[in-house]
Image (cartoon, rainbow, N blue to C red; front, top):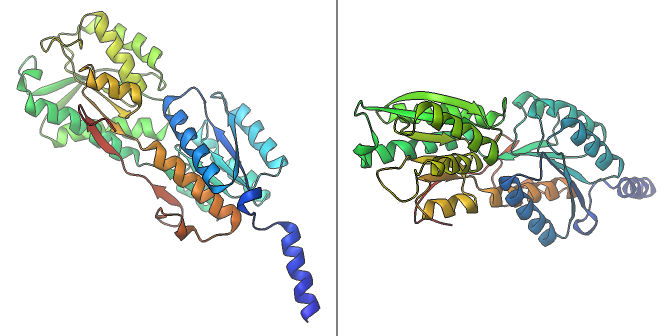
Length: 330
């Protein structure tokens, strides 16, 4: 009997069911490296992996799901201990989960959330992120709070807020929820929101600048009362378009409140200069740290309750958002 037990133990060790930190390899797939928020996320992940003694390799999906799928296949073939995936298209996450499951590799999704049904299909699949509806609500509250403190922001004195909405990637859950809940927060604050125009700008500053420039030319800056952007990069693009017509450059009579999401360094700087009203901090640091801690725990067979972040419903780590205005640089 003792010989059987020893043989079984050796077999388990040979199969490598639990990686040790010093030989643990994390394959991290990012939808696009050229993204300010995901750069902060990656930096936090790399630092935490170093602290844990784990090796981490990043792959740039270049905003192509086909490219990312090939990278995932390579990571699995190379024998990584765990996958951390920021999917290009979250609706293809089932395919990623199926591949991880077939290889018996844990997978931690970040920033772009698979559906609950997808996560439920594999016991070693998890998600780390922030609830997009919270960021939308807080962005809308920033606008409503400004209008309550500055009645002159209601240019035509109609009790309504005429706004421009700059949206992220089409179909992205953050775009959908941030857009919906930001407008709802304005309603809940007692204002009637009036959408003058909206457009998809794909989280990109230059694209948002071009779109906003078109809105400024066609609608007129004297009509626009607020700009709500799904992220800081697009908010900064809107600011640049407004500066072309001498708005948001320090003159209180030529100012349109602009809000974004992420609290990246450029947005905080723009806020200090009075060019942007505020942002909602999407805590890339804690999301990056918790995703690596979870990945290491899953790959090494450790109790996930020891990572320092609560897991909700057995599948989720949620990092809260936080409103940031001028003078609150982190």
